[in-house]
Length: 269
Image 1: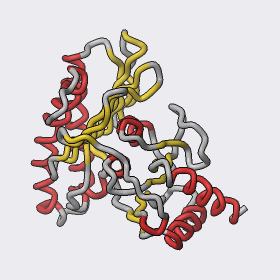
Image 2: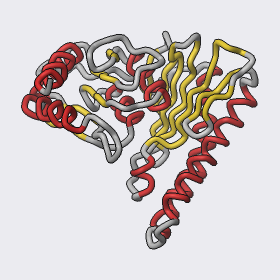
Image 3: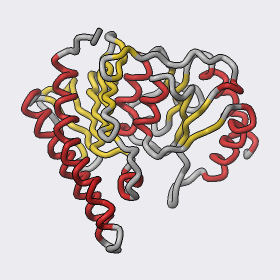
Image 4: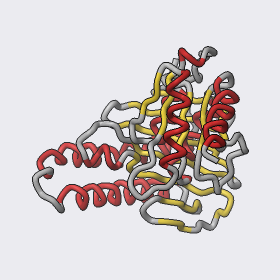
């Protein structure tokens, strides 16, 4: 039976769906643009902005007093200072640019500086992940739980590799090596919001990445908590609005990952 969604979640889902229609059309055009050197990147940043504008318009109509924190548009203060939308209109931009169908729209509502509700929508696969504090986490109406895997060697982890211009390459390689040695594998799919949604759905057993922003994580944090998972900084410290990294896992793997990744970090010291 589908779980009844609150008015708030319905507003978020409707905004994501509306923005996704154009994104999917634009994604279909990507292959035709590959020949032009300048074309694709400009086209994608334009698609990104259009999706964000659509989401902002839809959310503003429904909740005119709420503020915004957006990847493209920055901060817009609202009259209601305790509620703020956090939006990533296209998570997985590099995938989108290369014609890889793994990207998502991420919308979160932050209430009194804490993630309160989140929607992550993968339009190509029509997978709508959503969660609201105290109401559970769902995928297209089906209740989500993090995986129950206890043995590290059975676990599959998602991660994000620092790319050109990002720091911590050597540290990351030590952490990856440590996880590879003892687990069933690591995957790097290139969309942090979807990685978090997939941990909440029990597909991955954990996820870690550094150099993230609020809009990469906020919706996924609600999904994880509502699916019975644990989120923290990689050191195990509590996540705050200023955090720029995340470790998300089930209750068995979270403390083990804190230990494993911490050891790998110290080895380079």
